[in-house]
Image (cartoon, rainbow, N blue to C red; front, side, top):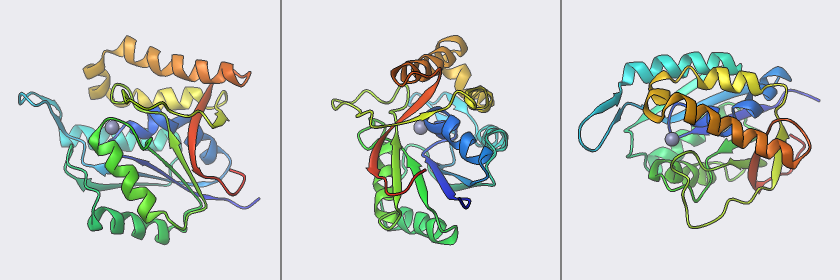
Length: 217
Ligand SMILES: [Zn+2]
């Protein structure tokens, strides 16, 4: 089977690692062309003004993580953090990437994630990706996934072989780990992967809700 062009989209640096890092690493290992696209420039200032992550820090971390996952390209669209739009600009920027790389598969946020950036990212992806054959939404992100709707666990990927790569990539986001607390954050990510793995009789898995699934991925 020929190599596929895979686009993994996250609103912020680290979203892809948490949501579909193991799956992305599996694609890279299988020889697919993986492009990671981040919508926001990912500096983070709390509403009270405390700077939790500078732009430079985020850029450094996202580059390292993308390299570990085996991505061929890392694109950052540079929208303002917490103000990622669902607009002509966001849709057309994504369209350029989708057409430019002839994308076969897109991974994106869950549509009902409670973070406004995550939601608008997926709204933009669905508009821009209207001709893409496969679109899968990864699970809501910690801690922004507390929605009133439930995620539907429809499609599983066994990531037992690449779980260590997912975690290694995630650990590059030192500023995020600082923010959420290393032990609790990493353990929660692992626990979810174990839980999803157990559901399909494997050690680790990632789970997706399907927008469209036409080919074998
Ligand atoms: Zn995020």
